[in-house]
Image 1 (cartoon, rainbow, N blue to C red):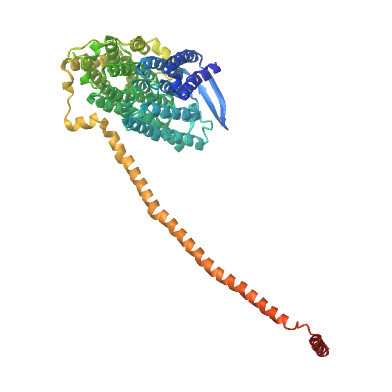
Image 2: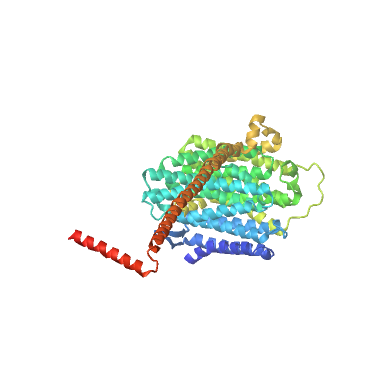
Length: 616
């Protein structure tokens, strides 16, 4: 079984790399290869989900690379591969022959392979590597149409925002090593850390998870991510990157519980995000922006579940949301391709033109609204039961978020089912490759409801191996369902005019609470100003100091050269002059006349005799 686990993560990563590297020559075959690879990965995922293999390989001394499949990761690998298969099948017709298909499908496979590695990682080292690859490929996919500067800027914003939060994982890994209590960086051992190191680990994990899952205050990057192709949005928002943070919090729920403060912080952040970003979704007039804000809100429920200890409910919410949200984005992409718009007023009658798309979108929207008997209705009550057990106020805020879900979902439905103001012309039916994943996901939105009720829910709880979870009472299911149906019916009957807010409230809400503006004001601009100041200091102070030092060195060298040259030249000339003088004096006795040599000899002997007499 260990070989199957290695194959599960290696297959999409290897094939994706090959497609991306080969490039345009493989465009013709890329869709079929990618879909076939994902279907094979789905088969492997189902197998390992039942077998629960665990593998380990040496990486660094004392830090092995580990992969493992347990109850939670087993459900996740099946969800990731199933949704990826549906999205790639849809992409086969949505990404036309004129596009760089090999690059697109290669990056999508790399993206899903990184997510599979993330959910099966048993150590922080492997998790960090997969986390980075997922972030890099998401940047490339959001900026797939890189020739458009606006899309490139959106990709950069998403990448830099999530990268800033990702530093929390590095902080957590460093604290785990420094504590000496988690030497192998195994995820299961992180709750063993104690004292201040445990607080640092918890804070780092929470920051990274909030950033990846676009929870407050990081939510704005998900709005910019809508610049990517619709299949990218469908995969990114449903079962991969954006839910990775929620998955990490569910996985490390024991760490949150051990910290004491982590659980309430996470729970309330998720609840507030569900309400605030739900209101953002209500105010949107762009369908993809509405769905993006709803992603933040729906993942807020998963985060709330992690904080409330309702791991079973959070997991069921994650799986049900993956089916509904991928379906909604795929239909939005189909309408964008065929109708050329994603603005809600321009989409009037869209559901009537393509009935398959309209009906399946209705299933997705009603599921997001929490209308029974669809999956998110029941899953949300399972996790809210954990919140009610923990804190009544937390439950009421979560229930308010659920009601808001019904508002924005009904708003989207109202627009797409209204008769078009102009008579519709003949519309070409959607291709079979487009309809098949839509219908499959719509069926899943209904079928997954069974997972929230006994005996299936009990089986899921046993598979997850979590502690016994609070069971929702019948009145909880009835209350949430009745509220969702009532609110949706009112919006459907009266139309979106009920949702008009005062201008001073509507403006910031429609602009995603102006979170990006706040981030640029509080972080980006001060950093840029500091960079400008440092650059000016470098140019005006450091550079001038270096240049002045250089000029001084040159002047000192010239002065030294001049003085040394004068002294050395004078000494050399003095020696030469003395040598010449001695030479002239030495030449004078040398006349060549014998009587002078005889006289010189007599004088020399006389001097020697005198010296001899005096010395004695």
